[in-house]
Every structure is written in C-alpha cells, then in structure tokens.
Length: 428
Ligand SMILES: NC(=O)c1ccc[n+]([C@@H]2O[C@H](COP(=O)([O-])OP(=O)(O)OC[C@H]3O[C@@H](n4cnc5c(N)ncnc54)[C@H](O)[C@@H]3O)[C@@H](O)[C@H]2O)c1
Image 1 (cartoon, rainbow, N blue to C red):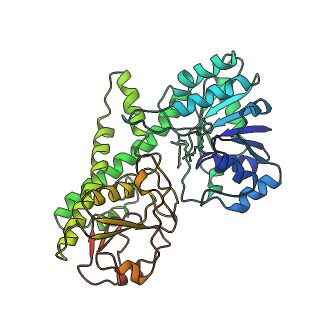
Image 2: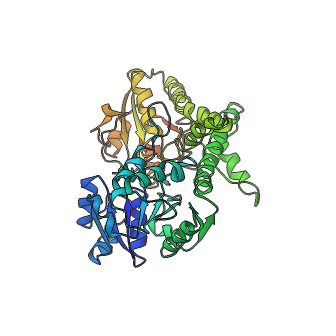
Image 3: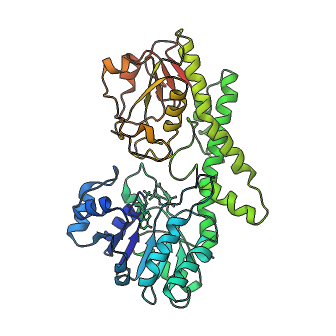
C-alpha cells in the first residue's frame, strides 16, 4: 500500500515513520523545502525523532519526501496533518486545511481515502474540507472518494514509537469511509476506536484538550489561593494523587504553551456561537491561564525587592524556553510572554535552554530572533540578578543552579528537595 502524509511536522513525521515501519510506502508532502530535503538526506529536524529512524525508512524506500503535490495520484490514502492556529482575532484559521484540500483535489484518484488529523472544530471535515475536495476533484465524498477524521494524540516528550500504542479514534463520513479508514490505521496502530461520525471524532479531540486546559487553570488558581494561605500547591497535589480513584494530577505553571492546549479550545468556542451556545468553562480557563505570566512577573518583582533591587535595570535569566519539559518546541511558549513582560518593564532578559540553542524568527516575538541560549557555567549564572525557571527540563542541573544563582523564581517546583540557602527560591 502507498499513502501520503501531508504536513511533516511534529504530528506528520512520527506518523509517516510509524506507517513506513509497518510495511506501508509513504510519500511525505510538505511546502517546506528544508524539511523535505532533510528527510531525503535521512536527517531529523525533531529532537525526539532519531536520525537513524528516518535514515532506516528512507534507505528501505519506505519513506520519501517531496513538494510535488501532483504525486497524490500515486497513493491510495492521504492523511492531512497541517497546522490549525488561531488568527489575530483568536478565531480558528483553517486556511492550511483548505489550501491542502484545494491542492490535492485535482490529483485525487477515484476511491482514494482522505483523512484529516489536524485538530479542529466539529464540521470541518464533512463541511469545509469536503466542499473543497468535491469542488476541486469533481467527485462526491462517500461515493467517489472516502473521507474521515482521526485526531492525533502525539505526546511530544515521549519516544515516537508510542504512536503505535496510543489508541486512535476514527470517524468516517459514511460507514464505508469509516471501514476504509479503520483498515488503513489498522496497519500501523494497535488499538482503534471507531465512532459514529467525523464530528464525534473532532469533538473527542477537543474534549481531551479542553479537559487539560480547564484542569490546568484550576490548579493555577488554587496555587494562588493556597499560596496566600501559606500552603504549597505542589505538596497538596502530591498528597491528593495518592487517592487511587477519581483524581488525576495536573500541575501549575507559568501559563499555557504549545500548539494545542492554548488554542484548540477556542475552536469550539467559535463554532459554538453558530449554535447560540457559550463555552464558559473554556473562557474562564483561558482567562486564568493567560493571567499566569503576570502573576509570575509579580513574584519576580517581589523576589528582586527582597534584594533591594528594582526590576528595571535588573538582569534576568529565563531557564527553559520550550513550552514543556524535555522538548525543543517553543511555539506559543509562556516563556516568550515572560520575556516580553520583563523587557517591557525595563529588565534585561536572556535565556538558557539546551533544547533551544537559538530563537527562531517568529511573527509574534520577532525582536527575540537570533538570541542565543546563554552558556551554562557558574560565572554566567551568577552574573544575573535573578533566574526564572519557566520550564523544568530534566537535563538542567538544578543543584548547580541552587549553588550558582543569586535568586531564583521557580514556576515548576524544580528546586524542591535540593540543598539551597533559605530565602533564595521563590515559588511562583
Ligand atoms: N504537536 C502536537 O503535539 C500535536 C498533538 C496533537 C494534535 N496536533 C495537531 O496536529 C496538527 C499539526 O500540528 P503539528 O504540531 O504537526 O504542526 P507543525 O507546524 O509541526 O507541522 C505542520 C507541517 O505542515 C506543513 N504545512 C503547512 N501548510 C501546508 C500545506 N498547505 N501543505 C503541506 N504542508 C503544509 C508545515 O510546513 C509543517 O511542516 C495541528 O492541527 C495540531 O493542532 C498537534
């Protein structure tokens, strides 16, 4: 069987490799020449995807990459894994999905299966994507070609081989579409969870992400409330999670990050308006989570104050720019928001992140582009008035930080249990 994966990012590349390792020939398509060329050379551009993993499947002719979308005619199934961001007004931007649909439609052979994996609001697959595919191909979904939605559940800090082990929800436009999609994923994934429609599958992914966003907001709020009472939220969570039923631990932090949790819930908020419905939990969680960086900056001010220093003119080192531990992905990271807020208030801000050696150009934080991760040594760390831990990568030596730093604000409980001078660490 030969299939195509369109969009070779954090989701598409591990999925393409999983299929390639399951005796499926995969044509990876992307607009980005750099990614396509790296795959051709058997190189990886994602930290947790090993070079050898790509090299093996490329050498075995199981995976090839291209920017030529007319090659869609060669495949029996197309899986779309392109971005679904929010626009400037925080509304869903499904333009990447629609563009992909328009590009592939003229090349679709009769009987091809098209599966969308990008996280999106219910109705995207059977309304929006279906419309552009039908218009561009002159064929009918469910009759001439098959259509399905199957959300990705990639967990970036985990080994990519887990793709095979994570149960996969699949919804089809028709029963036959569902059967075709189940047959496809059955080649590469151990457990499939069929649902009655594309919309149910789309709604399932949103529930999973909203669940995280709301629970993170809850512990973020409790962190502040308990903090005011002199109670440490991390100790409380550690105790609560010993309950063997009905509790799942979530941890506070400096705000939400990544490509999913801060964004996806608002896809539902937008769509719900069409049905005159309100998503109050989502809005409230968003409000609490987006306020967290302000809370952290206030703690930085207090900590500096205790050293008779003003934030203005101080040197602050942010440790951990990636949005979560042990990944190299800093998209939507609250670390950027913290750097912005601190700089706006007159601090000089630098960062240390072994997984992000240099800040890439981004639209939102263009002025940080090119800034390099500060080298890790006693002299450098001691030269900062304050170190702010935004993400707790496992590869950072926190005992050295305890020994070298003058003052630490810790948003991740990374310094817990270490030998450290009293008053040096402020939890935020
Ligand atoms: N990253 C995660 O952990 C994760 C987890 C679950 C779901 N998702 C969802 O999966 C989708 C993809 O996310 P990602 O993290 O892989 O994004 P990504 O930015 O890492 O990768 C997207 C890729 O698509 C390519 N692309 C963009 N437009 C294209 C087009 N028109 N044609 C072909 N290629 C195109 C980009 O060049 C890029 O390589 C999003 O909807 C996201 O919400 C992501």
